[in-house]
Picture 1: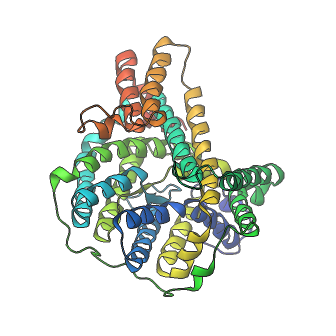
Picture 2: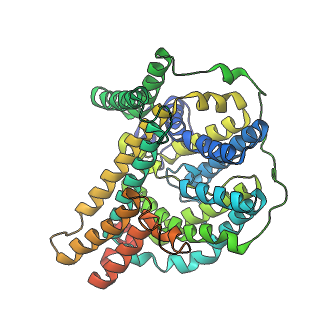
Picture 3: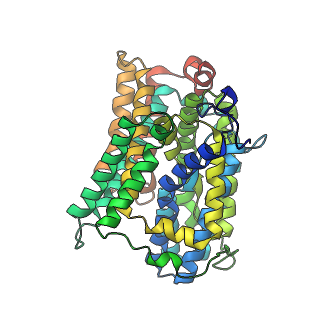
Length: 450
């Protein structure tokens, strides 16, 4: 990686294998870090507040989560022969696994929750050879539908963070909503006005502008940044030895299959955008193995599942910066943040409305990618039209109507209540019923065309 070379063909941000000059590398990496920094922090605080953990333990878990995300991002970006996709990926704690992790901890204890993460990570390796044979059942109509549902689901999640909890004193606060809308407006304005590098940094500039506006409005508090220890080393087995309970692990085991389907969609979408020459049968297992090994490591440090983030797709498309060295540098930054406590506290001081608004822009872009993939599907054919309509129906109902399946057996609710799972399963099944399995429509052949 050369720090000061001119911008020749070897230093193109739109090439997946291009190293970049240091100034661009650092700025683009910082953009990734700031966009996704909310996920590790909010996931830990969700668990910490629900379980009434001590402040020291909370800081330690934030450090551990940032470290796992950083090392995982480096692994997925640089990769090995069989692990890591060698694509511009950043890893984060999954939203659904956090909720399941918390549920296990509340019903049993934290040792059992960590044991469930470890068992689920091992289950990834066990089921991967079977799942790899099922990749032919994920044609463009399935991948496009999945990305669209991912976008809608995450827009709802981060929109909920902006408006707050119903019934609370500041629910739907005009101040928080106004700040979020201003951040979105800044991002779009910078994307319209700026070209080249500054245009590619529109997301980062929008986040900075939103933070400055929040500071002017008196909505930020950076006093805690200089308080507390300067360094924070993650603690191995912070809750003691894990307890392995297969029955308690079932929700996460079910999620692991859903996660593999999400990883398939994300991997193929990113692979197409960066022009990867590898097939789905090569890339997807590498991504899933990377998810598995980092989740396994996280289980021993008290975190939930660490998985590839949908943010990658939106940010790569929005910035057109495809270099995997950018996300590798972002991973290094996350690892540094994990060890230097004031940096983590600084990231935590950015208002939730600003971070969530930035995330909304990125996840909305994911929806446009899903639409673009679906545009390549012949929806004039009745079969494809009904596959998409059925998948959107079954996928959107749990997302838009919470509790839709609340009266169904509890054992089925982890799947029925997950819009991504229902949409993906429905798309696969309906595609088989209406179209069968056409080799020309497999992700592998689609990647080869790309």
